Image: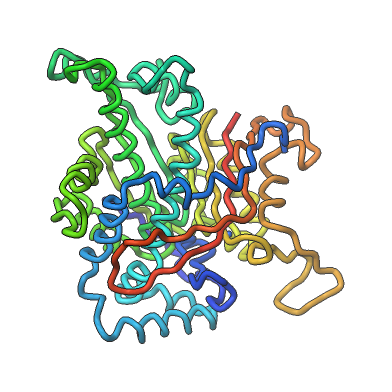
Amino acid sequence: MSQTRSSNQSANKGRPSKKVKDGTPRKGHNTGSASRDHNSVLTSRSSSSSNHLRQIPLELQQIILDTFRTSFASRFSGQLASILQEIKGHLYNRDFESAFGSEEYLEAYAVRWSPSRTLCYLGIFSACLDDRLRSQKTSTSSALGPQSLLHQLHELSLLPGPGRGAEDDLGASDGGSTRRLAFNVTSLGGGGGAEVVALSAWLSRFCSREERSSQDSHGHGTATGVKLSTSITAVDIADWSNVLTKLEDSMTTSAAASASHSTAEKDDARRVKLPSSQSDIELNFHQHDILELSAEELEPLVKEASLITLMFTLNELYSASMSQTTRLLLQISSFVKKETLLLVVDSPGSYSTVVVGASASAKSAAQKKYPMHWLLDHTLLPAESGKLDEECGWKWEKLVTDESQWFRLPPGLKYPIELEDMRYQMHLYQRA
């Protein structure tokens, strides 16, 4: 795991926890670790992360919770409640340097708020990406074969196409061949571990299912396979390197299957256990204040990304500095390759509004409040800002949007402390 430190370590870290109904303190502006073209936008209440999480084996969800439990086993002590209260107090007082300034606080935050977010994000990745792959199946195909999968991944730019960095690895066992392809993810504000674990789980499960589907359709395991070489780069202002290293160690260590499930369920969970044999996952961490990054520092972090995520981060960036955040989005737009996906998840409604036209906290008649997603559309979609496409030099398309959705934890999961449901908004864009 690589770590790059930034000299600017004093920026704001989040908003007061009491303002968040789901009980999750906001991680903040640059930690982010803490809420068109209308004809082409899918708005669907039925495609919630909870609905898609129900399709994921309960055993895998339990493994994810066990990953956090075993990674930070020493934190589940009688002192955890008081430590969490201290963190909430620092957040309430907007003392973000203290809230995320010690290993004890970072690990306590990770064991309390990252597990439920991980399960929510796993459902979101499944809803946004699985469904888009599945929707391209032909009516005569009962399962996704390897060539169909390759085509669909190329169409979504999840994998590079010919001439875009694809690497063949021919002559695999059983007379077949394996195509090794790269899938790079940059998670801005992703230090808390939720994005990293959720992405690892989603990629491993997706590859495992497609390999089994391919073998079932071709027989004897001789079908051409796809092996993802995945790079997940998390960027955050706080030093989450030790937290991520512990999670990475847990994900790559075989853990005993939960005794509360049947042998068949345990076998299925082992097939999707992290990491999958079909996905080599490399984790990198860079410690930066992302609003202070120069263009030269930002470009290498995003230019090869197939997916960029801003999970409970963007609203805090806007709240810290709308001009710097707009600059960040414009720079990302100019650096990324075509068909790169941008996924934004944040608190819904009034919890993600930005006040413009006032200095400090004093109320003024000149103040105006804008929804976060409106500012995002105004920046990324030329039609929203009144700019012509050719004036921008780039263009985004909004693929999916949902301004308010609930994630609800499924029954049957076990964890040492109580976890909570959460509300969120979600927007998925693709660079045209």
